[in-house]
Length: 534
Ligand code: GAP
Image (cartoon, rainbow, N blue to C red; front, side, top):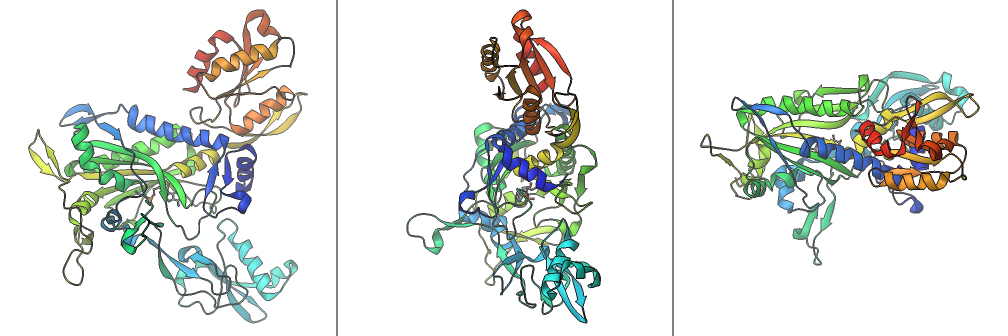
C-alpha cells in the first residue's frame, strides 16, 4: 500500500485533517475528523476496557491465584516544574539538531543522511530527510546541485552507502537537504523537547513551566494519593490516557511523530523481587492486545532493547513495533514501549534527581555537593501489612501511543480487492477491514429505494439501532455504491430494507469482508449485530 493513498482517504472521508489547514497548516499537529474521532475513541475505549475495567487474568500471588487491581487517574497537563527536574526531562530530554544557515531550516541530526555524488570530478555529500525513497531523493538533490537534467542521472557517480551525517567528521562538503550551496549546516546542538509555558500574569523565569511530555509523571506524583484513597494492595496498576506534547524537531510521517499526541500509559507497581516476572507478563500481554485487535502477521513484532538503547531510568525495555508503510522496506517503527523502570521515579520524587552509578542509582550533586534537583522530601514507600515490610515499589510501564496505534490500525485495515459491481462486473474496491470493535461505524442502514414505505421502515430501524451502536443512514445512489462508501470507511455490516421487509419483517444484512448476505428478522437485528461485533 502506498502511504499517499491512505493519507488521501483519511482526508477525503474525514479521518484526519492537517491542523489549522485554512491558514496553511501547522507542522506536527493533526485534527481528527468525524470518523477519526470515533476510531481513536474506540482504540482508547478498547485499551481502557481491556486493561482497566475488564481485566480478569488470574496470576499467582503469594502462592494463590488472585486478580491484581487496576485503577485510573486523570492528571493535569501542566504540573509543578520540579517534577520535570527530578524526572530527568529538564536535563536529559533532548535531541541533537543542526541548523542550515542558508535555508534557515532545522533538522534532527540523526535524521539527515546522504551520500557522496560526483560529476565531472567534483564531489559533494548530498543529503535528504526522505526515508521511503532515499536514493531517488538524493539523486534529485545531486541533479539540482550540479544543474543537470533527469537524463544525466546515469552519469553521476555514487560512492559508499547512504550514511547519517552524524558519522561524518565535518560538514564542510555537505549539501543540506534544502540548500543550494555546500557547507551551510551548523555543528549539532542540544534542543530540549519540552514545550515551555508561563503560569500567571507576571511571567518571570520562576513562573516557567512545561506541557507534559509524558503522562507517566502525573501517576508517580499521585502514587501516595491513590494508595491512601483506594487502599489498593501491591501489585496494582494506575492507568492514564491523555495528551502529551513534545517539540519534535522534525515531525513527520503523518501522525507518527507529532508535536501533540495522546498516550495510554500504565504504571504497574510491584515488589522488587517480582519485577522481572511482571515485566515479562506486561511485555507479552501488551503484544497480545495488538494481535487480538487485528495487527497480526509479520508486520508486528516485539523487540528487546539493547543495553545501550535503554533510557536513563530503565533496566529493561521492549518495544512493540509495526512495519508502517512509510518506513523503508524491512524497517519497523515503535508503537509502544514496555519499560522496567525499577524504583527510579518514586525515589527521584522523594530524594531528587538520580543518576546511574555502576549498577545502581545515586543522587546527582552540583559543584557545591548539593542535590542538583531536590525531590519532594515526601515518603513514597509502601508498607505491606501482611509481610510487615516497607519498600519502594518497582514499576513496569507499558506506554502506548493512541495516535500511533490508530495509525497502525488504519494501515493494517487498508485493502484493495476486486468485487463484482451491480452488473456483476469485477471492479476495484478499497476497504478498511477494521476489527469490529474499532470500526467507527458499526452498521449502515439503507432503504433499497426511496418509495413503497421503505424509507419509513429504514428510518425507524436506524433510530432503534442508534440507541445501541454508531450507525449511519444512507439513501443516496445505487445500493452497490452505498456498499462501496461504507467499505471504504470500514463499516462491518450494511442492512438493507427492501420489498420483502414489509411482507415478513426481515432485512438483508451484508458482511464487509466476506460479502455474504443473509436475512434477519428486524426485531432480532440488535442482538445479531451485538453478537457479531463483540
Ligand atoms: N513514559 C514513557 C514514554 O513516554 P516514549 O517511548 O517516549 O515513552 C511512549 O513514548 C509512546 O508514546 C511511544 O511508543 C509512541 O507510541 C508515543 N509517542 C511518543 N512520541 C510521540 C510523537 N512525537 N508522536 C506520536 N506518538 C508519540
